[in-house]
Each structure stands twice: as structure tokens, then as C-alpha cells.
Image (tube, rainbow, N blue to C red):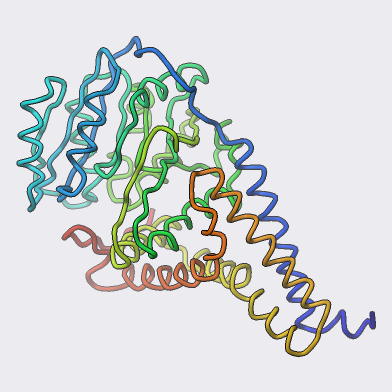
Length: 386
């Protein structure tokens, strides 16, 4: 093959993208293989466990969530739900459930003070009422399979974990959910995050998913609880960073056989929910956001464009490199799907997912620099770097 053809800009770009795809494919293979998993069963924990649920306008899902927790096979279990000034029927549902479950306690949230984000304020108040040796914070849109709490505490005990976070099985009913939600899995398991390093508690990287985070009481006290992340819209990420900074042992593991989560139900909710989180998760770093956008376009969109161009102009080497890249990214998405109980056909959505992700990134930046700030559940949050 002539040297001048190898040095063509399209060839060089295609080769660089193919190399990038190979690296990320390697990450996906390694991270999913190293991912920890819960024991298949476990006896009731010997210690007292507090499960803490912040709830604001959660009438869609709060009943199923609370029932699934209250009915766990844990002898010494307290379930505390904070009704965070809900404007729907959340309060009425919770009041009815307290008549059914003696281990359920409902507290009413107080007005959000300056300098706090709603979820962190709710979790902080929940922690003040909790009496357990293990504190588990979980979202109202989750459903816990029987035995999950016992299995989670057993994993923490066996591996001497101070902070445990689970990856739930995501319930998705709309096209938008299928297209966008797996971006979380791609970011965590097919990029720079190394699960072995997370489990071994190096200072970076660190990760957690706020849909289920468990602490020993001592660990929660050591990091300063949710007060330490009081102004963060992505409290889970920064709780994990705090645990690493304080030399605590943390783990992010597969929980798809024990907990389900139905985060959003529409394209609007998906876009707003991810817009709220993405730029704050990057500490409002424009350079990092720009690099992430470039990565999404180069790795998941540009190869398709290059392949079409190569088919039209007959460039076999570009055709081969672009085809390889598309195959590699297809395999990445298939690995993610298989590891986290997601549909295999998600693999064919990756270019759409990437473009939607770019839109979310730009909207997240726009929100951060707008006068009103990020919007969520009737509250506005101005940008505050940390």
C-alpha cells in the first residue's frame, strides 16, 4: 500500500480512533471481569441495620420501594423514610404504610437551608434519626429483592468494606431510557475507571451509585456524612471520593440480581436528570467536559461517517479501520449489556446514545452557567465548584 495513502488525514484519524476503541474495549473486558458480586444468600445480619430513604414527590414508586425494604429477612431492621415536603400523595402513602409495618418510621423534612442540595440535606437528617450499625441510603425509585440487605451486609463483613455501592438493574420503558441510561455503565466500566483500584481503595479513581450506598456507622462518621457533600448535585461520586481521601475501603459491585431501579420514565426526565448530574460530576471543569464530548463523537459517531465515506470513495484501509472500530464499540456495548442485565440490542444504539449524550453535556453546561442554575424537583441550584 502506497505510503501517501497511509498518511492521508482520514487514514490517520481512522487509525487513532481504532486504537482508542481497542483501549476502551480492554477496559470493558477487564472491569466487568473484576467486578465484585454479592453472595447468593446470607443469614440475617448480627448487627442493627438502618435503611434510609429520601422521598420527594415519589407517589409513582414509594410504596413498592418501602414494602420491598420492610419485608427483608433482617431481624434487627429499621426503615426510615423522609418525606421531603412532597407536593403529591407521597405523604399519604407513607402514613398508610406505617400502619402496616412496625419497623417503618416516617419523618417530615424541614425547609432546605442555604448551601445544601435537597438530597444531601434529606440524607443528613435521616442519618440523625438512624440507630443502626450499618446505614444504607437508597433511592425511592428502587425495589429490593428479598435477601438483598442481608447479602450486602455479608459482603461488607467478608471483605471488610467500609462503604459499599451497588449497580442496580435498570428498569427502562421508553426509547429515551434505553438510549441514555446505559451511558452511566459505559462511563464507569468502559473508560478510565478501574474496578480493582476502586475495591483496593486507591485515592483515584473512586465511584459510587447513589441508588444504593451502605456505610458502617464509623465510616460514615469519619467522612463527615452527607454534610461533607452538602452542596453537591452528585453526592454519590463525592462521597466515594471522600471515602478514598480518608483511607476507607470502598467497593462498587454488581447488584443487578438484588435491586431494581426505575429512574426516569420519559425523554424529558432522562435529559433533565442527566443534565443535572453530568457537569457537576466533572467539578464544572470545561476542559474535562470538552474532552468527554470529543471522545463521544470520535469513538461512537465519527467511525460511522468514515465508513460511509470510505464505501463511497473506495478507501479500503479507512473502510477496514472504521469497520473495526464499529465492531469494537459494538462489543463494548454487548459486554456492558451482558454484565448488567441490559438488552443486547442496546449495542446498536451507541451512535444515538453518544449524540444524545452530547446534547445532555451542552445542556448541563448551559444550566450551570445560567442565572437559575440546575433544575430538579422544583428546586434550583446555582453552580458551586468543589
